[in-house]
Image 1 (cartoon, rainbow, N blue to C red):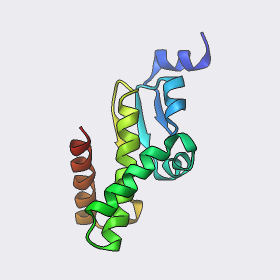
Image 2: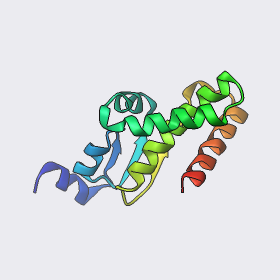
Image 3: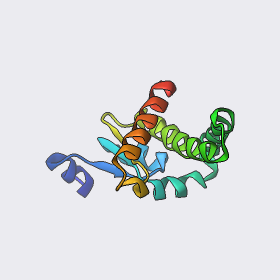
Image 4: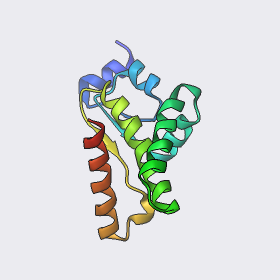
Length: 122
């Protein structure tokens, strides 16, 4: 039994990565989409379709430049989250922008937007 299997026998393994191939390899129970790790994964060639569809979504749905930017970023997180959900048996945690941490109303609004995007994505 390797160390990962030993850990699995004692606790829940959670992945904190945007690299879907790593998640498929290590098979965690749950995952989180950390923005800095998503940024790194979004630069990998194999994930360009996820990024491109998010850009197209933001451009089509956003009314202002700021709204297009925010929608694109949230849609990237949701696109990765949806792909990760196809691999993990548990949950995927998508982080809200940390700069909103002192603005409860904005944090809730952003979380509701992420939830709506997940519902829209199926």
